Length: 161
Image 1: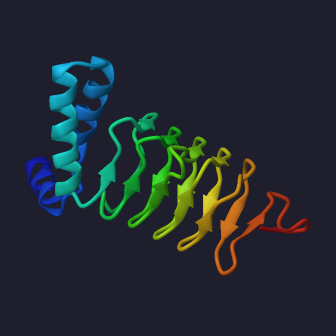
Image 2 (image 1 turned 60 degrees about the vertical axis):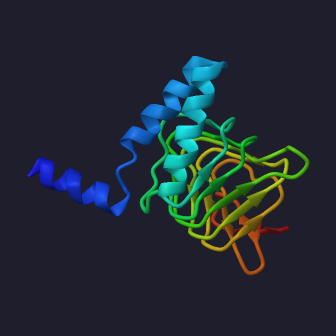
């Protein structure tokens, strides 16, 4: 059964085990010809899985990607914390070579856009379709239409953005 499950996961494009191994190896190598080859292989692998992770992006641990890399774009200048859950079609983009720094344990819903020189705190939940362009404190929830930040106190001190 284990082999059958691996074949199914691989055929769906959800088996990113080799991708993350290449990513960690590329980060350990530093620079040089081997680093360039690994960067090329990572780019091709991400493209095959339908996403993009910049070669200089800092990703701590292994993020949970329930839908694989489908439509996920992570800027080369971005930093993603440990234990983050990122759904499909998420954009973590840059403005003037500055990209978001995302804390640990965050959840980023499908189709969310995080852009610019912002900091997303730890354990933040970003709703599907939200466009975030300002800093978000720890333990908050960001919901779209229009995007607003709900503090951890249950919304008693709602602030708009």
